[in-house]
Image 1 (spheres, rainbow, N blue to C red):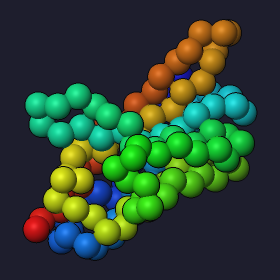
Image 2: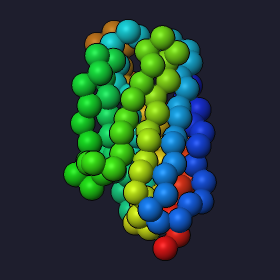
Image 3: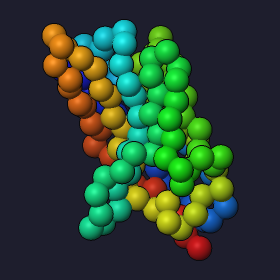
Image 4: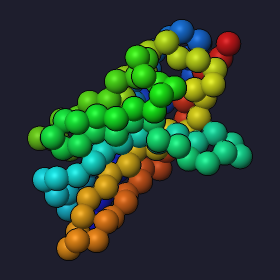
Length: 119
């Protein structure tokens, strides 16, 4: 089992920045994907950014150039630096970890942290 705990959400004005952090604990394998997803009320959860344990990254088009994902493998943490925030970035942000346990893909989620961007 893996536990994920997010922190860093809050209320900011458009154009400002926030940094989200997520700490993973439990049975974490050396190879995994960690990422951030977000969900607005009434909408499906969507990918924001993902990073592999090797450091490869992938971003949703709508955050490229504004958000940066990073991780510390030694501490099992992942962070999302969000710059130039827009009101449409207002969502609950979820930390995600994916790893293969005995060849079975396992998805773990944090409890979510609210990000609100006012115009």
